[in-house]
Length: 113
Image (cartoon, rainbow, N blue to C red; front, side):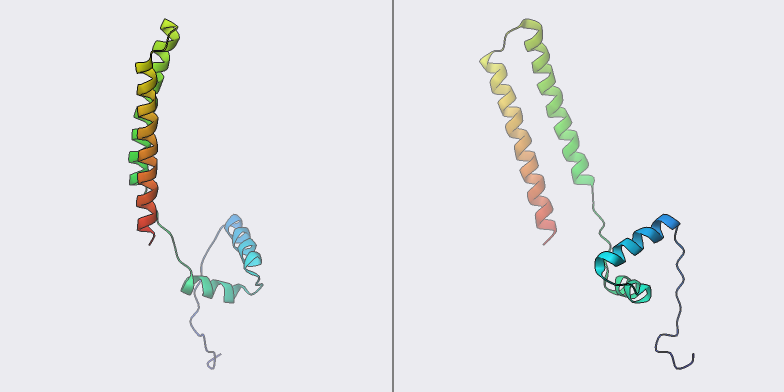
């Protein structure tokens, strides 16, 4: 035992479900050696932390746009008519939605680089 290259032992406790998940990932990785897999993941693996604040803002803006479109639809259903002004307003809202989505995607991609 004194001649071991790796003399320090780390103990990690997991649930049965976590263990099953780990072994499935090991299978996908193509290894049956838990020690080698665990060592590789702990040294070279990484954790991704996603900041969702931007998406929460986007969801809020999309919700506001949806509310506006619903109000226009309610008026159209109540009156039985749709004016060109109503159609233009909906088009503006849809364009704003696309602008927000493109802006969010662009911001997300630029953070990844």
